[in-house]
Each structure stands twice: as C-alpha cells, then as structure tokens.
Amino acid sequence: MINLQLNDVVTEEKVLHYLNLTKRAREKATPIHEEGSNESSQLQIMMRMADDYASDAKHFMDTGDYVRAFGAINYAHAWIDAGVKLRLLDGHGDDELFTLP
Image 1 (cartoon, rainbow, N blue to C red):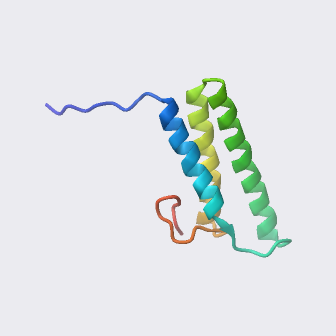
Image 2 (tube, rainbow, N blue to C red):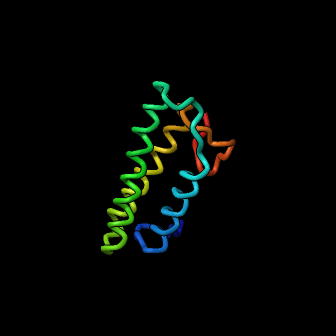
Image 3 (cartoon, rainbow, N blue to C red):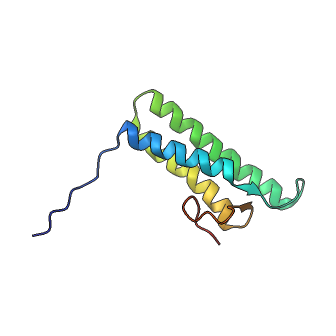
C-alpha cells in the first residue's frame, strides 16, 4: 500500500512563498521590445494584469482568505510567465521562475 500524504491545505506560509516567487519573477523579467512598439503595448497590458492580480492576492492575504490569495498570485505569475513564453519578456534563462521559450 502506498502512503500518500495530501498537500491540500493552503497555508499562510504557502501563500507567502508564492507571493515572493512572483515578486522575484516580476523583478527579474525585462522587456525585450522597444517602448512604443506594438509588442511593448501588449506587454503593458499583460503586466498590468499581473500587477492587479498580485495586488488582489495581497488583499486576500490580509483578510485571511488564503484560498483566493493563492489563486490570485498564481494568476499573476501566469501573466508574467506568458510574457516570457511569448518573447515579450526576457526571463534571463531562469527555468525555475519561468517556462522558457
């Protein structure tokens, strides 16, 4: 019999871990295209979404709603990761923070 321990509880520590991971990703990823280009405009929309979801995650965290905080921070990270995958952001070869192209 295999003894599997479920990891199905969203804790404050887990949310803080992902908030930090996403903060690191946001700081590390840098725009590839020149400001004013169509790609830059698209990236601004994506980063606004990432920042809004990260802000939501912090709000939910502050109110003790760890489930919604966990969901929101994962959405935030996904927007940043998508920017790297679509080659709008440079992930600088970091395959721990990003799904590289």
